[in-house]
Image (spheres, protein in one colour):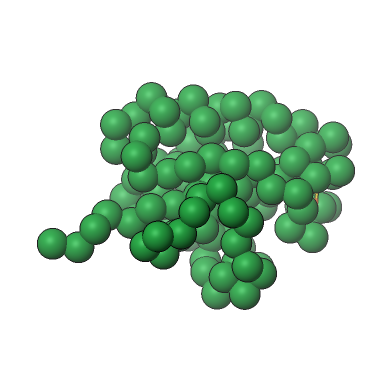
Amino acid sequence: MTAPRRYCLLVCDGPSCGVTHDSDRLFELAGKTAAAQPGLRDKVAVRNYTCFGRCDDGPNTFVVELAPGDDPNRDPDFAVLESQRGFYPGMDEAKIVRVLEQHCGKDEVVEDLVDSY
Ligand code: FES
């Protein structure tokens, strides 16, 4: 039996996403949503991230799939971000719940929201 996938949802709190786009409320909502759902609670960590370099598109998030043994509290290498399809720009409350439930919960990229990174 293979181990379930694990994810870290990075919510940008950089100078544009955090200040201009008020990403704090998304971070809070994502944490509460993940904690409230048994299928997500042990599968996804929600963390802040400084800046993805796509400030005009914010608020931005990234779902990073963790390798076995990866510490969700460590920032991923840039190469890891570039290799994964998990960048979700222009998030709002409804979109972030969809990303959590579909990408993190069902292991399916949300095709109409994901963008290349
Ligand atoms: S501040 Fe969020 S991408 Fe730069």
